Image (cartoon, rainbow, N blue to C red; front, side):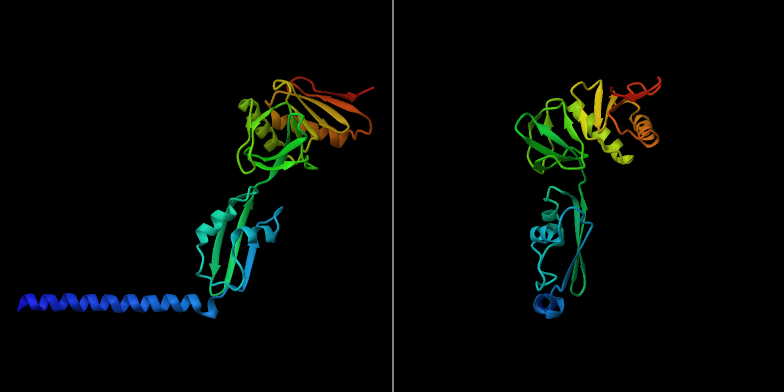
Length: 245
């Protein structure tokens, strides 16, 4: 008798499970076909250099699709494959809005590739963002030789120590909103900057913050209309400034 009751109890539980699963399935199906959950607006936040269309095209999202018909995590991963995107998140605002938030990589310099006429746009981590002509308004780096590059990957160079110094110095420049025209690392121990109309003998990367502040003070206090130079290899010695005759 007890055995029969146990069998009936198990059958009852299985039936309840089937009914609950069916109800959940019908509810999920209803969500997927309901016009209430069709995407009406897709908001994009954080885009600076990228266009909304570039981000949308990569995301695969579109107005009219069901808001539950895609994976937010997978969509964010797709968007993060864009070289200029450092990170991305995708969130749903029920019942019918989606927000894409991106953090872009900031280009800091162009690196010349030998005598090929190709220049690589890099960010502060050494990621290659683009290849082509030098970007106006960014420093041109010379004195290192790329050995391998691919857009969306980290640049490989012949001297990693020098490259790390270039990235460090570029971050210092950005901190002070200082943009030289050229960074010449031909002699890593004696770096030369060119910021028209000045030639700046910067020396090693040591005391970079103090050197940049001094350079800016010279530029602000003594506007140069002719070719000039700043000799600042040793900030603890007496820096020199003058005109090139």
